[in-house]
Length: 161
Image 1: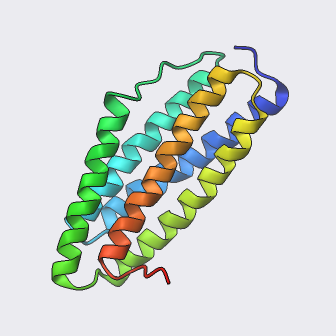
Image 2: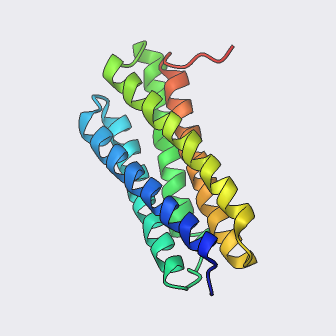
């Protein structure tokens, strides 16, 4: 795949965003008090590392093979199940800790931003295969946000009105 200057710049920006996500999720997994939230954050950190590697491959001119049905989706399913299980316990135990709420709020805002930047990148790419890869990553970013939202809502940390 031959990248335009703009596509290269967008991929470099996305790589920086993924670096931030990896760092935030890794640190959040260490700081969280709820073991299930720690697991959720650890799973998301691993998926962000996959995103980073995918972007790196694209910058080298390769279109990465999509593992949408096996590895990545299975990991996302486990993460969503962990969020649901953590949510059930949150309902039973009341509310989560202030630190956990702050971590979730920060990461939810981060996912909203990163998903939006992928939206822009997708529309700027000329190769439909590259757009498909970026769309897949964006979908996973949205699923991360959904998992955090589910956890927060179940723990009384987020009450949409």
